Length: 188
Image (cartoon, rainbow, N blue to C red; front, side, top):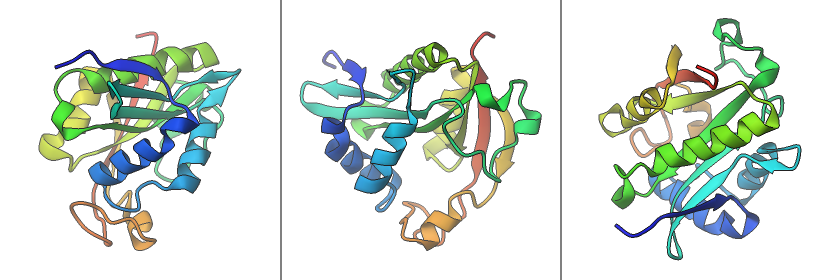
């Protein structure tokens, strides 16, 4: 394996990020509109919490993270169960690694970079919804290995998106995949 280069996400990465996201997660997961919105939510105090990983010119991974207090806490979140003030919790929106580059620590490194940026923005914890149907439940296993704690499970988390055009790679347009709401406390 060659050396992987990491850097902050930039608009010049958007086309490659969209392509990788839709390949891994299913068509309709990401488009030009939502990547712009998700990218903007990652900024606070002129610090960007989103990162990309490249093998030469090939995008092999990315992490999108929303800054604390710059994302909507919806019905799929359980802030009453968090041991942190919700205004100080960032949201780990998406972590994606090309299938040929998994198992080399790229996802973990992208998470570390986002945690460092989120801390510099003022966050003390980060929450995410992990896809329990990932191959071998690898998403939950990886996040747990990185310090994540299970908060609550949420059946049908992505169903509404599927009914609106997201083609889940497992369920199609009637997604019933389950999300594990998990949190990482940065000082623990």
